[in-house]
Length: 307
Image (cartoon, rainbow, N blue to C red; front, side, top):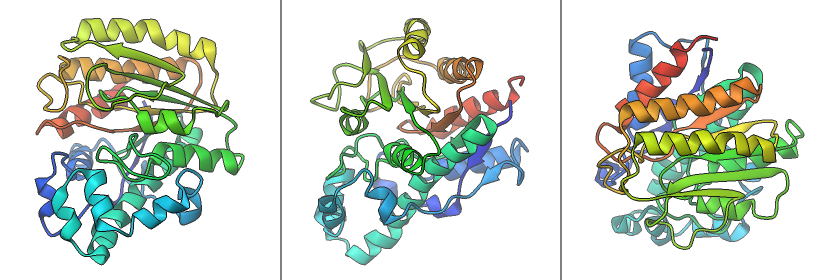
């Protein structure tokens, strides 16, 4: 299957080594990219580097208060749940954290643009769905998918979009942002009894019990995907493909295997493909040491699917 990969070396967060103390592996994006290149699965013809999102694009989702909040290291420490960030200088946080995150958000926007051309594009970052208009939360600062959607709608590139969010955590920020927006349909399938609390209603939510395995998960997804497109026909789907649904992920309690993740991602992509709906995929969460390998295998599988 033809797909475009969105990636830049500027995705790399650099806080002088302190970034390695975070539970999320910020090197995941580079590891996946290097493996794709090493195995000659992608090349110059289908790898695209984004520009950072602009203040004007961010402001389509986030408020003036949000921009002001980003100037305070204590707020960034709270959003990323890393207390020591409060002691770092604002200039270091701007250069080593916020600047890379702007490129990652730009990658999600570029994935949307490329998906409209080729049918499928994968941003090797993004999916920061817990950020709200006036504040970050849950390891998330810029909510990149809403920024991309609002940008594409504002410039009249698209009229409507759907979010399919299969990260194990409910997409609370995105659900809140689009609560009253008839042009965007939000769907979240997540574990019911973990962060976040509360969970603002998406247009459709499917809640999972702890211990949900591949067979149960995939059966539920198979039942739900047709309903989504009966209720709403978007110009594009933004898919959050978090692999924190994996067995033994430290921040959740589902029991999926790498094979289950691969089948899940393929089910979403093939369903959209059958309906000629472009998909922009982001990688969202995943906190196991081998999260990058699982997501690499899924992208590898998608590339090798027949057109």
